[in-house]
Amino acid sequence: MPDPSTTRLGLYKSKSDGSELVNYTQDIGQNWDRVDAAVGFAPATSSTRPSSPYAGKAIMETDTSYRTYFSNGTAPASGSWVEIPNSSGTFGSTLKLASSAQLTIGVDVNLFRSAANVLRTNDALIVDGALTASSGLSVAGNLSVSGIGQTQYVVKTADETVTSSATLQNDDHLVLPVVANAVYTFALDLYMIDAADFVGDFKMSFTCPTGATFDMHGSGAHTTDLTAGTSANGEWIGKLATTSAGANLSFGCGNTSVTAARVYGRLVVSGTAGTFQLQWAQNASDASGTTLKAGSYMTMTRIA
Image (cartoon, rainbow, N blue to C red; front, side):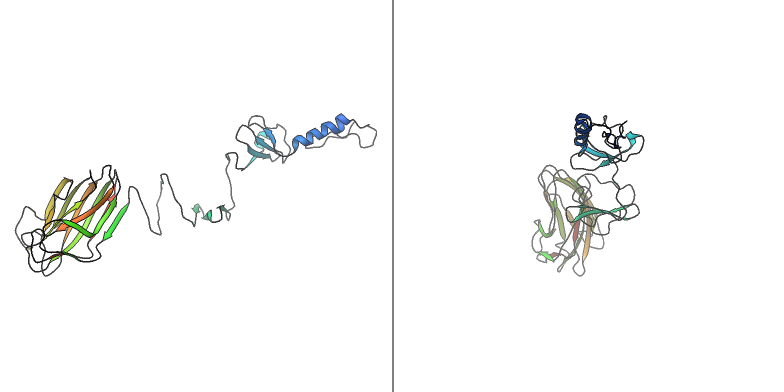
């Protein structure tokens, strides 16, 4: 009887006492063929993995883009295979890292566990698809949104005065960009004063991209005076589906203290992007100038 074959590759071993003549085919040729076949990862398919692998046996699957595995030697053989990640095949198992380990990409980007149930990166994170938070969302820094939900803000940084003109003109500061095929809400706080009397007052509207429309309403002082009376341009004024500065709102101005108006509305932009800009002038041309004060501001929020 020959000696027992090797445990892993089943290599034939002749009797160790020298009583058996060496058979080249059996003792050398077939043994070396088995050694050669066992070098590296043995090719197999996902349905033809070795049925009796030894612990450490490595295979590559030719029908799954060369996923790689080794056997841990446990029974049954079908449950002994442990997947090894490689850049050729799609990794199909759970990848586990130690609690203190990090996933490093390149030389500077990493993902890691910073606390129980917390995934963290201390680099920038960009999400090109949808981001859903099923629980609370906490933002410690600035939140920048370029699509629906974006809020823009601009403030008037210096006083601006119009004298002897009831022709609407672009405001020097209160203008914001808008994108095509979007819907925005807007709100403005406007602070104004008339230099010497109640004649000039204040008139405003907006310019918007071609094809866009805006609805607006506002609250502020009467153009007749600041204490009594009513007017076609009263405190609460609404304009619907406006497409140009032809529709405007008018408010009264005081000459000893700043008065204010609040304007709200909705802008619907069609296929042309551009800017949404405040226009204003005196409601009645008057040599006593009307000033829109620094600190007036406009906000816009994209809702669709």
